[in-house]
Image 1 (cartoon, rainbow, N blue to C red):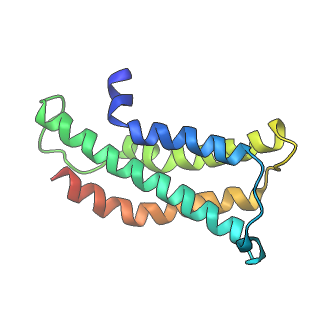
Image 2 (cartoon, rainbow, N blue to C red):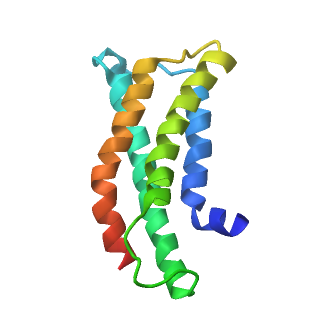
Length: 137
């Protein structure tokens, strides 16, 4: 398990960073007057998070093929990788919203934020599949 986490160290760091950022009070910025800026932020944050996970998943797969831990003929992604690269970021987005609603007084859990998180993850899917295939080669 620790071996796998070492391959996904940027994802682990981003997970911790997102948790910290999402549980702190939101500072005032000139962008707060932009309509739906918080939704755009969620889309970019979780889309980027999921895309990094796609990249690290591909690099992990490539190293596993090199080390002989998996067969070389099977280089495309499978269901378990889809669960990891799509399911986990979407679930994490929901978890963040629940944590905001229950652990903070300065933030509130919002279903629309969760939908924005999930939309960002789906956008990352569109970019993640070709990136994954490219990096595995």
